[in-house]
Length: 298
Image (cartoon, rainbow, N blue to C red; front, side):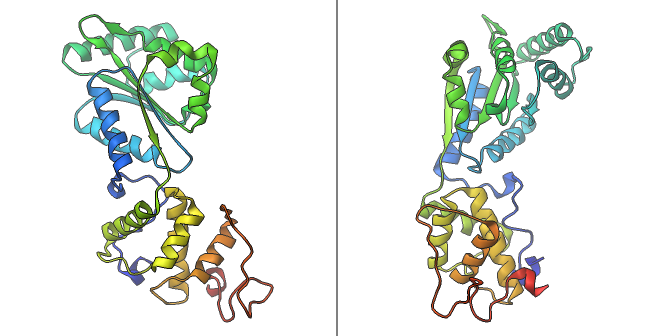
């Protein structure tokens, strides 16, 4: 809605993961490098963890793009609320295994055949599981057993990437999963942005959308965006997107703290140290005099 007003080629703060808008912070560069290294080195199990909204799925999308460019076979499980039967069905479907997807035995035979064939050609095969913290214990055990598919000469035949929230680490600490935990060779972790990273992240996305010089968010607004989002990229995107919509509604190209207050109120956002702010002259509605929210404008 506001792209033409600000001169953007596309929405700079789309909430859907988009590798084209990847902000290559040091930690994201390191995480992606570890994922690629783990796959190429046949490390077996790789775990990527991070709080909600820190960019795990974006990292997986970047990994997928890399695997496709390298013609590496992979299965991507995006829905982890599955039982063991559905787990094997999804693997068979994603890897296009020529077998009965209803038979675990046939899927395993077909999978083993594919893995050996790929390995003999100097290639590997990858299983990526997003939201892995939601996996049932039985499915995690099946994943552990898939890690046993190896060859003395070729090494690990299947590289397994598990991505999830910090709860995944807690789950892997359970006594009944100690065998799986011991097999994890590489661990990557994503943390919220610092203030400097937050500012660079916003500028980077605006630049890629068509605004070379960031002049929409003043320094005071940037600091508050970082504070209120707690450095979480997904929340940063949501706040910036709503701020741009609000600025467009009142026909200004510079955002303000008052706009941010309204956006946070609409999003019902809480943050550490939040307190009721009522500037002088403000009505009980909590809105600045003469200020209309975007929904009042249309």
